[in-house]
Image (tube, rainbow, N blue to C red; front, side, top):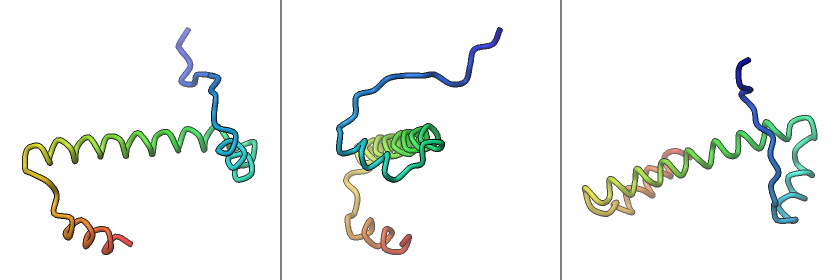
Length: 74
């Protein structure tokens, strides 16, 4: 028998966050939305780690360049 690709869990979440989540996301889409949000945050965490590693190697980021790139992306 193969192991399921999904796990069921129980979390404690701040009431205001949970209220907003329930108001925004239909019940049938909540698991998918939560998984997407977790993946997105993990990607951001990975990016923060990469930036930190590069800053240690190459020095701090040029904040003007960061703002220019961010403005160009929007």
